[in-house]
Image 1 (cartoon, rainbow, N blue to C red):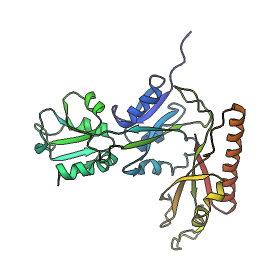
Image 2: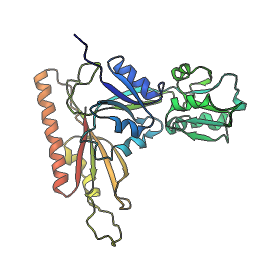
Image 3: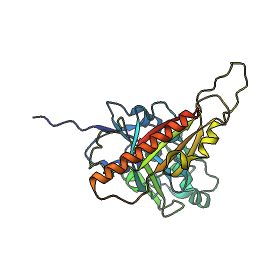
Image 4: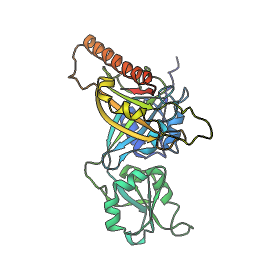
Length: 316
C-alpha cells in the first residue's frame, strides 16, 4: 500500500531564507518545499497543486512587509487563498562575504529590503556610503555574492543573511554576526492555504480560532470616463467605527493603495481578535468560536450594507 504523497508548501527562496527556516521549524518533513522567487510568486503559487505557503508579514524593527499586503489586495485573497496561522522567528543577521574578502574590500551590500532596514545602524557605522541593493530574499543575496568580485564584472559584494544560510553555500564566510539594530529582532509569518478548513500538515489543528484579517475597501467607482477621479469617503466612516463593527478587539490596521485609479482610495487590512480567556472545555471552546465568527460575519454585512466591500482573508 503506497503512502499518501506529502503536500507541497511554497516559500520565498532560495533555500536558506528566513521564510525557509521558519517553514522548516513548523512543518519539518511533513511537506515538500517549493521555492519561489518573490513574495508575489509565493502567494500566486497557492493552489490545488501547492496547497500551503509561508509568507513574511511583519518585522518588529522594520514594520509591515509591503509585498505581502500588496498580494492581499488580489481578489484571490479570501476566495482561493486564506490565512490559516501565524509563526514567529527570531532573526539574527550576519554580514557574509566570499572567503578571504575583508570589510574594506566591500563595494556594495545586498539583501532583502527588510534585512537592509533591520541592519541600518551597522551599515551606517561600518560601511558608510556603500550602496545597499535590494534583492528578493536574503538567501538570494548570499547566493549572488559568490558571483561577484575578482574575476567577474560585478563589484565585490556582501550579503545580509542568517548564519544557517551562509553555511548552505560553499565559499562564503561570515564577517560579523548579530548586526541587526535590535537584539529582539523578530519576524512574524503567515501560513497560507487554499482552504479555510483543510487541516494543516505537521501538527494538530489549533482548538479555537481567535484571529481574523479582514480587507475593507470602497466598491469600484461609478463615474463617467471623462470625470476626474474622486476618493470615496465611505471607508473613512467605516474604519472610524471598527470597535462596534466587528464586536472584537482591533489588533492592527494596515493600509495600501487600492487597485483602482482613484487617488488616495486605499484598502484597509484590519486584524481583529477574540481576546477572551481560554476555554478549557472542547464544547465550550467550539461554542465561543462559533459565536465570534457570527460577530465577524455580522460586521462584514454591516460594511456591505453601508455600501462598502469587506472580505475575511483568513481565520486562525
